[in-house]
Image (tube, rainbow, N blue to C red; front, side):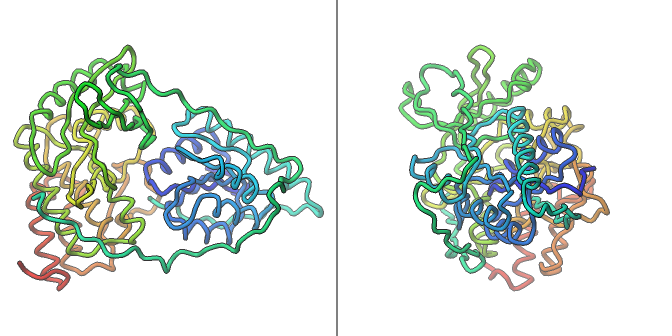
Length: 462
């Protein structure tokens, strides 16, 4: 258990998968520190204005507020707080602003190495303690109030409402001279991990998502003349020959699928020790980011997602494939707001990671993920039900257990009491812990879910 006499560390990132992976690495490397996560900018502002943190790690591109503004407010409230900016790509102007306005101590570029991340945060905690000791009079750190970590047909169009902006709390502007860098503040820049060595046909690689089990890059396929997504599999998984054989077989099957709501799987390739999946690149936005902006979607939009996603999963299961790790950031809206399900061929890797205890996001994974080898559609029923709950409410289902869950088999999801009883009943059966108690297929779940929205008066019957 962390020592609550010390100030906690706060991780802020609008991608729950990234925030959770960082939390797990830091919790393992710094067991004496409490690690909190937050995926919303407005809640991050509320946290840094009501609590004191030793270190705040914040993503630069947060919806509504920039990471610089959040770090600036944390520093204003507690001058001893050490700010770390995490970014995939930043302009020189943004870095100068980070130093002058937020007085950041370090800028970390994605993707980062777990051991290096823990080392940087450990050094930042020491710097915070030194700053606290230097204060006069020295204030003794009292107990810290514990806040729960956040969990964290193609012709159909998902119609989205305007983003809700009222909930965003903007911090007061901090005026400082352009060159006002406090004494003792020497921001350093962590070197990025080198671009992976893939086949020469793939050029112009750009990091899209760091991921815990593999980074995703956008690349141009010069041989085919198109943009593709490269999912570079984590080294520990890529070294598992049995896993790669299973993934190769499933990738071959997946490459033959043709459905308007499924991103095309193009193959699994290897270049020395580097293994990566090649998939159609979907230009658009994932629904996790959409939900973060809108705080939940209208019932009409969620019903379209349920229907299209279920149709895509049914098409895959007809060929003997299940997704295994469906969640809202695997659901993409293309430029025309048509749904595309991505990541179909990566399920085996997620399953193996669960067995190995590798840090990853698990709330959407069914309890039997590390035991079930067969292609059981009820695994996707569980994940789809969790995703529909998040789309409709803006949050993951509540946890019915008495202690914080740390793995899929410990999570006891229950639908929010704010939802109508008809909808709760359908979703609760969808993410039942025992497979035999769930709806038999994603198609049946989507049908029952739509009917429940109509019965509750949230959706007109078609």
